[in-house]
Image 1 (cartoon, rainbow, N blue to C red):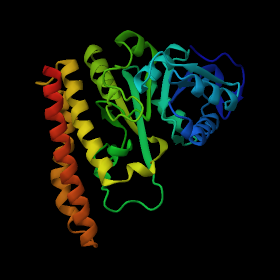
Image 2: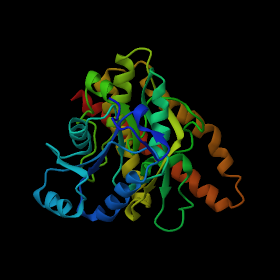
Image 3: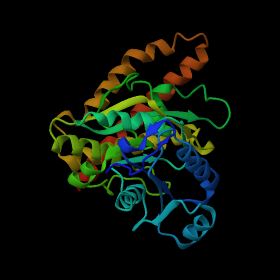
Length: 321
C-alpha cells in the first residue's frame, strides 16, 4: 500500500513511499518521559511514518495515565494480555502499513532511522531488518562491562556485523518486518516474550528462525546505518543484573530451540560464532593499557558465559518436563 499524497515532504516523494507503521510497547508510567522522547524522535523522521501505534499493557490506570498525555495523532491501543510479545502482536493488528517497525519505549531514533530501515526492503527477498542500538549509560560508561556483553542491556554488541549483512534475527529494540510475512508466518510467540521486568525474552529470535525456515530464499538484514539510542536503566548497570540476565538468556535460548525443534541444526550458529569471537578476542582485553580494566572485563565475560550455559541447561530440562 503506497501513501496517497501528491506532494514531496522531507525530500521524499510520497507517490512512491512505502508505508511504515511504528509500534511502541509500554508497560509502565515510570517511563513517561522516555515514551515522550521516543514518540518525538519518530515524528522527526526524514522518512515519515504513516502512523505511530502505542500499545499498553491491560491496566486501566496505565490507560488513563497515557490517554491524558499522548497527542491525538498517536494511536493508543490496549493489549489483550500482559507482555512484550502480546503488545507487539496487538500493534501489528492495529496498524495498516506495508512495513511494521518496532522500537522500545526507552529508545530514541536517529532522524534517518526509518529511511535506512525501509531502503533494505527494495530487495524482495528481504523480509526483515534490524539496526544498530547504541547504549546511553546513566553516567560514565562502566569500564568493567565489555562491549561483547552489550546484548545484556538490549544493545548492539561486539560480534554483530559492522556493515550491511544477513543475520538470523534482529534485536527487538530496533527492527522492522513486512506485514505480509507477519501475517503468513504468524505473529511473535508469547511463550518466549518478556513480561514486565521478567527477563525471559527472544520472541525476536524465535520469529526470525521460524520466518526464514518457512519462507525459503528469504533473508533478514542488519543495517548499522539504521540507528537508535537505548537508555540503560541504572539498575541494569550492576553485576547482579549481568548474572540474572545471562542466566535468562541461556534459559530463553533453550526454549526457542525446543519450540522450533532445531536443536540439531543451524539454529544456534549465531551463538557458536559469537563464542568463537569471544575466544579469539578475550585475550586482547588483558593487554589493554589499564590492566585492571582488562582483567575486570575478562572476569565479567567469563562469569556471564558460565551463567548463560547454566541457564541453557536449566531451560532444556524445563522444556522436557
